[in-house]
Length: 99
Image 1 (cartoon, rainbow, N blue to C red):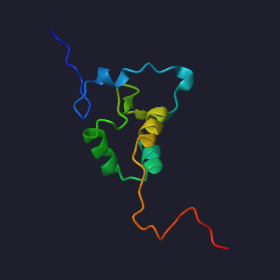
Image 2 (cartoon, rainbow, N blue to C red):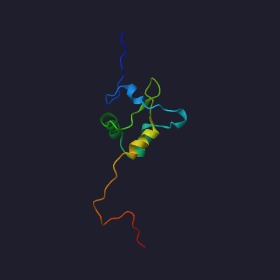
Image 3 (cartoon, helix red, strand yellow):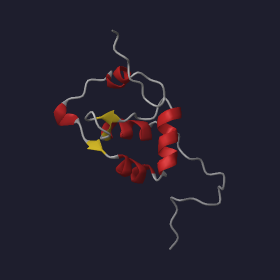
Image 4 (cartoon, helix red, strand yellow):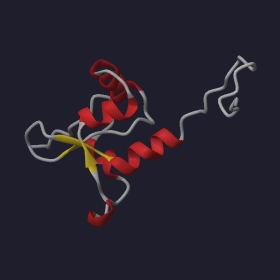
């Protein structure tokens, strides 16, 4: 009898999510709520990103139940890889200060 491979919502096999070895002292886990607050997004936007953006950090299941967490370092890597915002209004300079 073959064992059924579990897949994440984005279609990746669960085994693919653990390609990078994680060392216990380096790992900080955050909840979906903490991730939402960090990114400033809604629950539905978070769910959509998990399912459709291959670069988005995937959750880790910590038990056989519904307990999931995100690896904080992976989230920071994702954020640092986002493109910088460009201002089209050159009259506004966020770095200038008026006295």
